[in-house]
Image 1 (cartoon, helix red, strand yellow):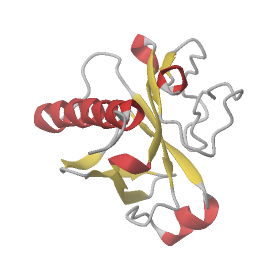
Image 2: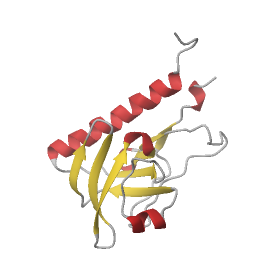
Image 3: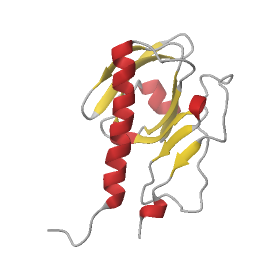
Image 4: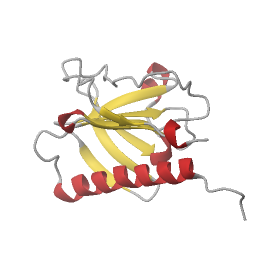
Amino acid sequence: MPNEIDYGNLMHNAMRGLIKQVLQQIERDGELPGQHHFFITFDTTHPDVQIAEWLSARYPEEMTVVVQHWFDNLTVGEDAFSITLNFGDQPEPLHIPYDAIRTFVDPSVEFGLRFETQDDDEDDAPEEPLPPEEPDAPAHADAEVVSLDSFRK
């Protein structure tokens, strides 16, 4: 039996479960409600991430995608989700494990999650993820970001 409760891991699991539930609703309904849209930044070096080679070469460490107007083939699984997104009129399938996600932001309601890692500097301010594929996407720097640092010893 461990000597202490790992609240950081428990919070990460709960936050990933929230993302999964949101994506399941979108999968079920087939579209995003209202003005909702998501900026999802993920670790492209995660061993279970599946993206095209040209995307991996362009984004060797992390990538931010936008789920907004056009997406296809959203499939929400237990440990990951798959989606097809458009990159310059080129549809590309993506497979993203939940534990590869670094940030999840819905600027339409000023909501955001940031997953801290051991390598993250505590003084770093969360960055607003902006996708290079959609430069005209609205940026909302005032989105609420939940940081787990305050829960750690």
